[in-house]
Length: 371
Ligand code: CUA
Image (tube, rainbow, N blue to C red; front, side):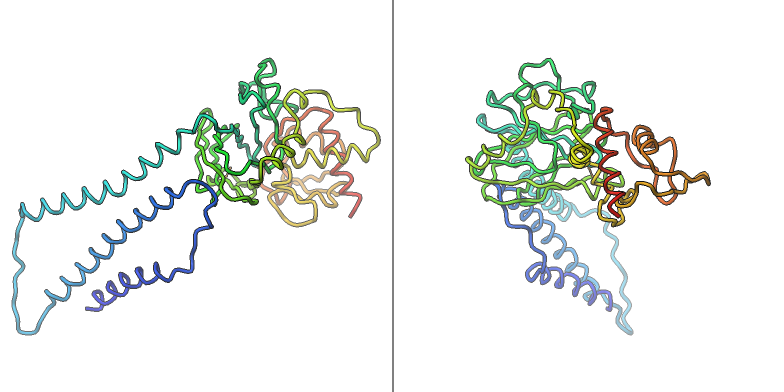
């Protein structure tokens, strides 16, 4: 009897919890109301089955409970055609109700309108980068073979279509309000998943494969994007922002970002150490170093850069090492060669030109001096 009461409480409690739930979805900011509707249908179908099955068990426990002085035997009934027919029909309808709406919505989700703006999202451990098609609306070819320190997205330098593409190396991208966006996604290493909850839009990014979906942002705002597949120790730091604004602001923002052709021009020779360190700071952002290294002394996946320069670090093999230019350069080029006590040996090799490496080391050096 206790079990019957417990099941009754669970079934009724679940319904009440759903009605008075303290959990809300974020306000929707895209055209995908149908995603929410599909989830609602799934919840109702599974909810009805959950409550009905539990109440049926409660009923049988009560109806056939043990009574003193009464001897009843269970009836053996291996076949009941009528009951089986009913169960087959009910579960079939239930499963169709669960699957069919998703298929309809997904079919629409992967068929962008012709006038959609193309946004490429590139995931790497552990940061996002973006590329927008230029005025011609075409994204140039890309291939992992072209990935280098100066071409982190691996864009084909000989492709004419690529020259006008707008390159966004930070974690923040802007989009115009009320304009459909076709999102094309690539990963340069492992499985990632680009997810912006208020857009109700997300998709896995499988290495070696192009994934695509579309949506229309319907509310202006700054929305957090995140990675929704565990992709290594820096996964939780793989966050970014999508800013939705009106067309004029969007166009103005695009102008502040370099085209691919501009990004391939050699940078102006650095003046003093100050400018070199400033370039290093920008690189730490664009190369994703900041995902694992704090600059304010707080603990993260890797050592903080505050006060790191000049420090003596313990190595796992028992030795010690002085953090200087030479050590930093060697370590960033080949992070697996030595391992520092107290930190997991997970740092990826980040492709970087010699110039960029100097800038980054100057930045770390500047942070070390400022302790
Ligand atoms: Cu990328 Cu998790």
